[in-house]
Amino acid sequence: MARTNDPEGLRQRLVDAAYVAFTTRGYHSSAIHDLKREAGVTGGALAHHFPTKKALGLAVIQDRVAEAVETTWIAPVRVATTTADGIQAVFATIVSELERKGAVSGCPLNNLALELSREDEAFQAAIEAIFLRWRTAIADKLRADLRAARIDDFDPDAMATLVVAAYSGAMAMAKASQSVVPLTVCAEQLTSILQNRTSQ
Amino acid sequence: MARTNDPEGLRQRLVDAAYVAFTTRGYHSSAIHDLKREAGVTGGALAHHFPTKKALGLAVIQDRVAEAVETTWIAPVRVATTTADGIQAVFATIVSELERKGAVSGCPLNNLALELSREDEAFQAAIEAIFLRWRTAIADKLRADLRAARIDDFDPDAMATLVVAAYSGAMAMAKASQSVVPLTVCAEQLTSILQNRTSQ
DNA sequence: CATAAAACAGGACGGTTGTCCCGTTTTTAA
DNA sequence: TTAAAAACGGGACAACCGTCCTGTTTTATG
Image (cartoon, rainbow over all chains, first blue to last red; front, side):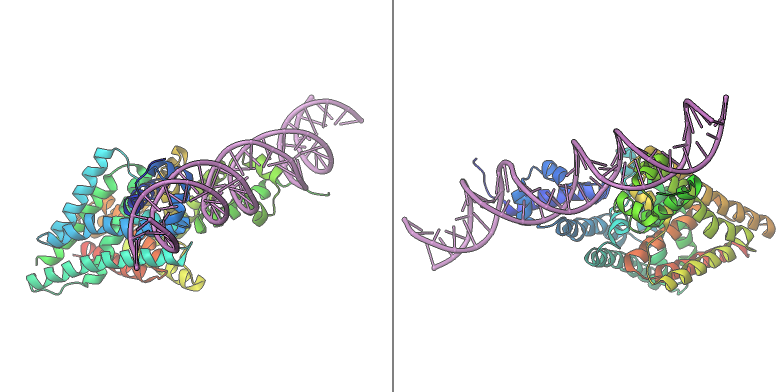
């Protein structure tokens, strides 16, 4: 059968399909057989690029999940005027996106974190690194806020941890109730807290 | 072989073993065969009490997970002097328990919520009910705080949502990093926020 | 152009999974 | 006491899963 080799493109198609499957249906609920069909890839090609399912999962985390956090969270916060503005914008974007889709499948990072952290050390290390990068980016922005307002009211690192935790937990509740309400509520609470502490 | 029928006790042993397995290794990672061995139960007995794995999972959620939330969260908050005191006590208890065990397997409710919410409507409904009960209990306690202090500074329901979200997310990060630090940080942040808003 | 390596096709394979079935024992009910 | 129902023992069963293997085609290298 005629074909044209495209190792990089085929790899991307595979990781894309696996990212969608792992972060919506879950890692263990996604069968390799289904991934091959969804990505339009044969068994030989898959085995050539990813010898094991674990290798594919690791690629999904390091390539796609990390990029998703970067795109949906870190970048918008960085370019915002203040941290509070950035957080508000991020939540608003995510909520409207969820309402458009009509279903809540949860935070990709959190989904894989709870399912895979205790299963394998490589998974845990990769996920932990993304969480660290996420928290650090928010903490950096908070430090900039404090410098601009010439105040020193709270610990930026601790507040960043709270922000990430509140978002992750709110998304978990949103998934459990299939409703965006927990997200809108927590967004309002977080911005209220931040504005209280940065403008006095 | 001689035996004595004990349907209720056998059922409890099964649900106990399944609770531990589902909330630590995960639902899909726990094989029925292993559960039978761990609970000391034969296939016939299991099929008699729980015709499917889903039925067993539902029993775990409704019987054990709901009770765990009640014992570790709702009851301590209810008997505490203030909500802030209760939350601080709950976090302290959980943190010391995790340090004793030496590993973070995550919040039982959150673990199953993220893994099973989108898999089956019965799972989702059962999990959502527990989250609702949890939030309501904290909101009730917050309302009592506000009445006692004769102030009306914030929305108790919204704050309760934030508390549950922050805890769930902090536990997720704790699981990802296998460290209690996110929990201690968020506990300090939450109590600080609450004490700021209830004593002015 | 020769040759080796990389890329891919297609399917087989053993192990595991959840479920189900049949037979036996214990308990209940009449 | 006896018949029916509940409780349980033990294992079989088909379907599924992830991995691996052999062979072919494309590409890089000299």
